[in-house]
Amino acid sequence: MNPPKQHYKNRILAALPKDEISRLARHLSPVTLEQEKTLLDGNMAHAYFLEDGIASVVVTVENGDTVEVGVIGCDGVVGIPILLGTGGAPGRTFIQIAASGFRIEAKVLKEEFERSSQLRNTLQKYMQAFLVQTAQTAVCNRLHNIEERLARWLLTCRDRMESDRLLLTHGFLGQMLGAPRTTVTLAAGLLHRAGLIDYTRGIVTIQNRSALEKTACECYRTVRDEFQRLAALTLLKDLQKKSSARALPSSGSHGNVTPMQKSKWESVGAQPFLRAKSAPRRR
Image (cartoon, rainbow, N blue to C red; front, side, top):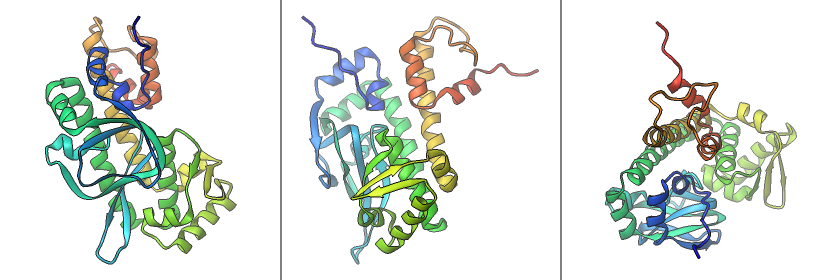
């Protein structure tokens, strides 16, 4: 009797073809990760594919101040230094919101990365998206006010948690945003009074996502759109490989697209980019 098929919430694992995920799955160990658990602090022996929860990449300076430079959830992998062959990096990556997922030995992931073109292609696109996220975070921390940054950060976490309910304290928010707790409390109060969020006992609930997006600076949209664009490119390549049709599906038809492929497109918001790619050129 065959074991039940594993359905992955992690978007990198979910994007892999059946033969590749079957080979990789033998090396994936389920893990539960508590809040504050360190995953990377210098060198790392394992990589992690989160299914839920959030990991935070932070940098601490000499006076002890800490600021977040990246967020990782079900969209990616904790372990970019492994893929680059460097084995480690400055800073610390830890669990920000309690998580679960899969752990894989660093050596095995590197071998599979070199062996599998599909896994390598998917992870390379994620690495670019993550670089865009860290660069845009630097811009945001320097140029935008705390209310805009808080809205951007809450939306970023919401997209990776796929939930409007986030377990966060004001003190933790201040640490992530590199701002005093009192400043974050004032900003959260403004969002609360505007009906955008609710906050009780360390739980932030997004009440009005569309209004929160309007409050957030353009950094949120820039990073979101890049993740979606790269996800669409990965899915298009998979479609081109599997489909016997010569033309890409038009905006009004999915052609030879399977229900599973259509579901993947919708889950990452890829449809606008697919329509742009498949639209006929005007003469």
